[in-house]
Image (cartoon, rainbow, N blue to C red; front, top):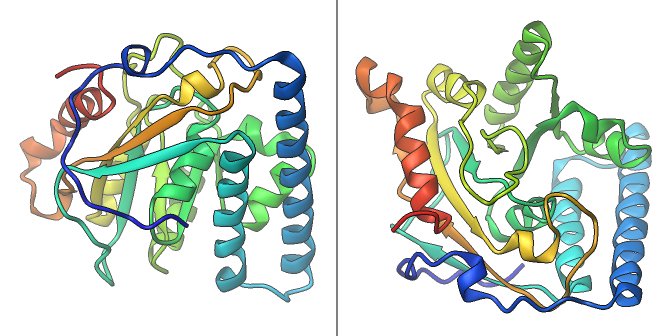
Length: 264
């Protein structure tokens, strides 16, 4: 994993303003996609086997998750920088909920590679239905959620709480789906409920440029992009009043808009 360097936030220009709109030729894009798929399937299969045979625990699976994420970025020749609005480190015994904007499937490897610690994603149920990859994610302790089924959603949040008790950082995209235009969509309530019930620290994260690698409407990969991860000021829900907790969605919305470059 890349060394983390703390720096101040850059000027809040949108990726379209700061990144070159270079298109990778279809052949190269297809090769990158096929390599990414093969890597995903192979590491997912290994994880399924290791976990089913009880030969691997989190100490083995977590580095493998980081390896998978970094390989996908490397295949696409993606470089990224991490910027911290305020110095932050993981405190033992605390619970953390990471919330980011969502512009592309490339958000997944970017967050998993860039954010330190043991990170697991709450993702939409459809991703877990992909053969081999879906089973691999479950084996790696990723959490599927069916947002159209309240009972199922509560089970998913219960599972996330269990992981948090063991030091796992839970990451989700509260928009629920990829933004078609890069702007923050209305945030869903599940993540905020999870944070409030566990007195978690919410870490807002703005991802910039992932849609230039893979658009929200397709699977073509454009190589050689420079992305950035902007980590905002932690919000400790344990010290918020009831009224401040009710205002959390609005507060995090504004944070994500700023961190993702949508607003200044």
